[in-house]
Image 1 (cartoon, one colour):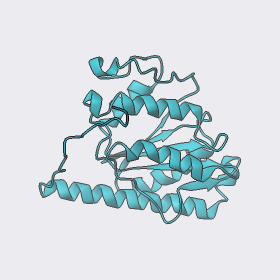
Image 2 (tube, helix red, strand yellow):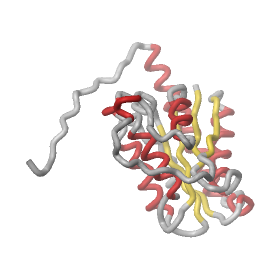
Image 3 (cartoon, helix red, strand yellow):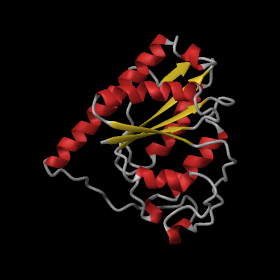
Length: 211
């Protein structure tokens, strides 16, 4: 089993990475492989609703890491999406990154990289804006039939530097419990597959409010 952790911070080894590393450590202790994938610092193109992904099966923009991430996502069993807080929201980079990653691999494009796989979001901040960012990231999972994994507090850490994050004892404890909960759900899913359990999926009905 493998969990893919997405680092949506412009700082490769900053506060968000520190929190993700705490999660990865516990997952590894539970015999679950991990990879921390950094979105990088190149400008991220926003989705322009060209719908080309419906024809080619991936995002038409191929000058960043979105398609690379989606290809890795097919082999992943679970996900952790991490972002620092910028103006009480997720970074512009991870917002556009996930928007294109999810839409180019959605039901309308026939993608199966994310559906039914458990996921969680984690947030790092110096002080405030955490819960708004947490809610924002969870929206991607909530519309993609992904079980959302939680901890015994909202998945967030505080600190302006990695050293300060390491002093946030409750935040790090929350990260570790999140990892244990993720490991538990992944093992439950694996056990279900061994017993032949399958998802029931009702065909989606799409309606517009204005006819």
